[in-house]
Amino acid sequence: MRGSITGLLTGLAILFHCGSVRAADAADWKVGLAHVKITPEQPIFLWGYGGRNKPFEKVEHDLWAKAMVLEDSEGHRAVIVTTDLLGLPAAISEPICERIEKKTGLKRAQVLINSAHTHTGPFLSLDARERENGMTAGDAERTVEYTRKMQDKIVEVVVQAGKKLEPARLSWGTGVIHFVMNRRVFAPDGVTFGANPRGLADRSVPVLRVDTPEGKLRAVLFGAAVHNTTLRPQHYQICGDYAGFAQLALQEKYPEAQAMFMLGCAGDADPYPHSTMELAREHGNTLAREVGRVLDAKLQPVQGPLKFALAQSDLPLQDPPARAELEKQAASKQRYQAWVAQQMLARLDRGEKLPTTYRCPQAVWQFGTDLTLVGLSGEVVVDYVPLLEKTIGPSRLWVAAYCNDLFGYLPSARILEEGGYETRGLYAGGLGTFTPKAQDELLHTIRQLAVQVGRPMPAVKKP
Ligand SMILES: [Zn+2]
Image (cartoon, rainbow, N blue to C red):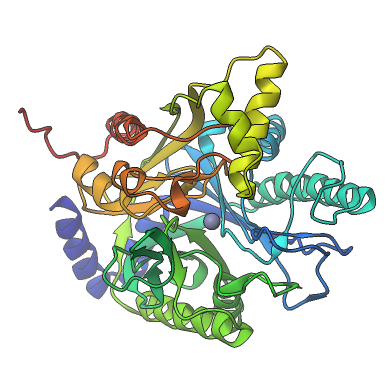
């Protein structure tokens, strides 16, 4: 309510006192922007599909890491980093955040790193051993070298953005795209991959507009909740997929502005249709057109203060199978299941206990009373959008996922019950499969964080 009255007053005032009111609005924020090319300079393996067995062959377009430092009128500062990468496991992202803190003073809670989950981006690893998929020791060394350089570049792009703080106005709105498709198809023998037009999907396109005090566009941060998988395992080109093409199209339309893509709860959504470079470009152009339309529409002003909170949630894992069962699974022809069982057996053989939880970072940022940004980690399925709407209220809410740690899928209790690819559990940073209670734990964490940052919340109903 307060927002709409403020908006009306601002609108009226602009009619009569354009310059002075805009200057008053501008006092609300300072924004600093920087971007850096992260296209690999040497041929290395791509990341996202199991079947690939050689390094990339050409570059369709460059990949980028982009930073937006925000500072409110009270000096609260935080940074959003977007990357055209599959994702950053904690082993890669946490050292970045530690170095950012040393260089800029920004603490962990003030840093949100999102990945577009690009399946035509470089494989990332700090482990230089050769792999069974044809990756030689040389390939692996080049991967580690790339990963380290990429970490340096992300630290540096945040440092640079922090040096360029300039007065800014923020506003936001939401559009819609229609190529977002639920990919869980119910076949007679279980859940499989495909297009499920009756399945839930988040087709919203949240857009944050950053202007100079005079109203000139400086940056746009926009989202979508669909895997960057228009391109498939047969593609050996470096490319940002639809998100890369969308950013390119926006950069062309607004050459003075920085276009940044932030992925939402895309865990069980694929682009539809998919499989060709033409479709990746087409989806990107569709998204860019919609972002352009939202930018031209009447947007909701976003004022401070900026409050941010980050918590590590301990999401419960299922009890592992007994040793005899693990041994059976380790010999299974199903490669992923066999790999998990082998990892578990190796730990047991070393006398280690198997983990009962996975600890992962969750973030909530509050912009005055105008907007709440939830930054979930992992490959979060779309069910969490309505679940979060119910938990912390649906209004003025932006839900991003694939932030800060990429550890695997984060399925809802419903999906765990139904089965399918998204229930396969952790593939980085941990070992195991989530229980349905992980959903309650995650929602509880986000509600606590939302209270902490002062989001206006719906009352909890007593049973
Ligand atoms: Zn994925």
